[in-house]
Amino acid sequence: MQSASRHVAVIGAGSAGLVAARELRREGHKVVVFERGDQVGGTWVYTVEVESDPIGLDPNRTTVHSSMYQSLRTNIPREVMGFRDYPFVVKEQNEERDPRRFPGHREVLSYLIDFANEFRISEIVRFETEVVLVGLVEGGKWKVKSKTKRGEDVEEIYDAVVVCNGHHTEPRIAQFSGINTWKGKQTHSHNYRTPEPFRDQVVILIGSAFSAIDISRDIARVAKEVHIASRSVADETNEKHPGYDNLWFHSMIKSVHEDGSVVFQDGSVVLADTILHCTGYKFHFPFLETNGNVTVDDNCVEPLYKHVFPPVLGPSLSFVGIPWKIPPFFIFELQSKWIAGVLSNRFALPSQDEMMEDVKAMYSLLEASGTPKRYTHNIADHHFGYDDWLAAQCGCPATEEWRKQMYFAAIESMVTKPETYRDEWKYDHLVLQAHEDFKKYAF
Ligand code: FAD
Image (cartoon, rainbow, N blue to C red; front, side, top):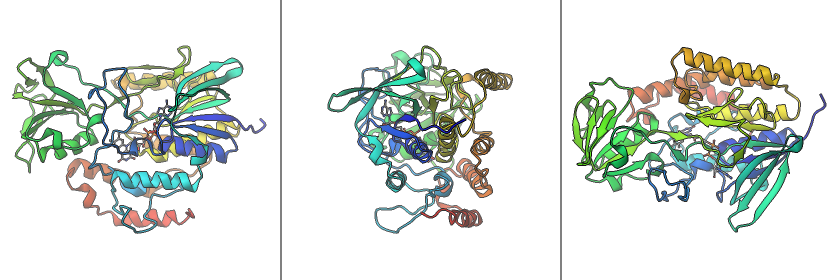
C-alpha cells in the first residue's frame, strides 16, 4: 500500500504525547498536540495546588492534573526510565540538575523539557487548550473540539487521534462498610503533597503500591500513628514495622464507624483522624464519543488490540500509555512507533475480526487465571514480552538485557529495602552496559 501522511491530533503533552508527537512527525505525519496545561511534562509538573474535593467525587471540581508529591524520587533507575534513543543521562552537572540514579521529580520534568526542545515538539503544541470532544465523522475522520483558556472554541477535522491524556488524575476510592458516612477526613494520594497536614494525627493509609510505600514513610515522620491497610497481606496481619515506633501493617479495613473508629479484618480497632486512599486511579476520557465502540468498565478500556487500537476504530483512533506497572517511557516510545507506522501504511494491522479475537483471547486468559477485569492493563508480569512484540512490529531491536536486569533488580530492592534502595544501588556492571549502549545515540 502507498505510504500516507495523515493529519493527526495528539491529546496531551506528557511523556506519552511528546514521544507520540515525535514518532508521528518522524514518520511524515502532520501533527498538532493539544495540552490543557501551560507546559510540557504532564504528571511530572509538580504543583502545591490540590483539588477542592480531596477524594475527587465532585464531578464539577477544578481538576489538578499532577499527582506528584514533594519528596518523590523515581522508583526505577534513570537508565531504565528514559526513552531508548534519548537516554536519561546526566548531560551537564549544574545546580539545577539532580544527577542521582533515582532522581527527584524535577529532574524528570527537566528531562522531558530537554526531549521536547531536542525534537522541537513545543512548536506543535497548543498550550492551555483542552480537548472537550472527539467524535467520529463521515469518512472515518475525527471531529476534535477544543477550548482555550481564554474561552475560544475551535472545531477541526483530523484523520487520526492519538489519546495520551494520562491516567493518574481521576482517583479510585476504596469501599467498605460505613465509609460514606464516616465523619473523619478522607483524602486520596492524588492530593498528597507534603506530610505536614498530618502532623500528630492518626492516619489510616490504604494501599500497597509504590506511592503508598513512600507516602506512609513520609507521613510517619510527623504523624502520631500510621496504619497501612492492604489487601495483599494475610487477614490476621497486625504488625509494627521494624525500625518505626508508629507504623503498623494491617489487613484490609472491615468497617468504619461514626465515632471515628476503623476496624480491620484482623480484628484490631484504631480511632483515626484521616483515611488516605492510595488506591490508584481510573481511566477517564470525558471527551471521547465513540458510539459505544470504546468503553471503560471496571477500569478496563475495551476493546483494545494490544492495549492500543480499538478494533473497530483503529488505526484512526489509538491510545498511548494504557498499560501500567511497567517502565512507561520505553513502552510509550514503542507504542508510538507502531501507531505512526500503521497510520502511514508502513505496518499493517490484522483485520477487525482478528483483532477482536485477540482481545477476546486475552480476556479468556485473564478470566482463567482469576484476574479481575480491573487488572486487564496491569502487565507487570509480562511487559518485556509486550515490549519485544511491539519492537518486532516496528523492526526495532528487542529490549536490551541490561534494561531488563536493571528493572528487576530495582523492583526487588524496592520490595526488600523500601527505605534505602534508591541510595544503595550496587549493580554498577549493568550501569556500565547501559552507558556503553547509550553511545549509539548521539544526543
Ligand atoms: P501524563 O504525564 O499525565 O500527561 C497527560 C497530559 O495530558 C497532561 O499534560 C494533561 O494536562 C494532558 N491532558 C489531559 N486531558 C487533556 C485534554 N482533555 N485536553 C488537553 N490536554 C489534556 N513512572 C516512571 O517511569 N517512574 C517513576 O518513578 C514514576 N513515578 C510515578 C509517581 C507518581 C505519583 C505517578 C502519578 C506516576 C508515576 N510514574 C512513574 C508514572 C507516570 O505516570 C509516567 O511516567 C508518565 O509520566 C505518564 O505519562 P502520560 O503522558 O501518559 O500522562
